[in-house]
Length: 92
Image (tube, rainbow, N blue to C red; front, side, top):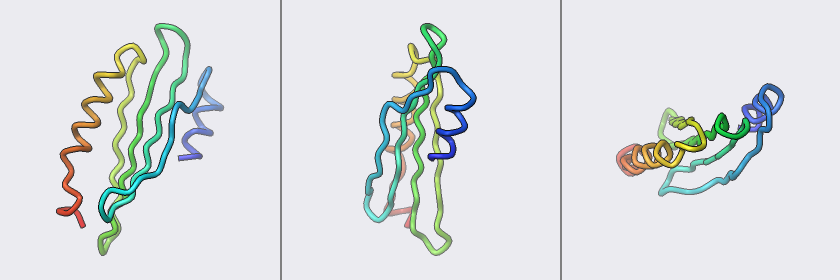
């Protein structure tokens, strides 16, 4: 995730990480990052979720929501609903 942030910082105006954290969900680990860039009505917010499921083949799910900051609450709710539909016990 650090490389992704570095690429955005060097390529877009006013990039900032709003939040970032690592969490456990049953046997799975996941990382969530929320970042924003741009100014005024053109500001963009992006939420990324990386879900690592420790199966025999070690599976990584990557989910991203990107939208204008003014519309982001709706996009974030959709991403959270998708994330909530995963049943980690079924994935492991």
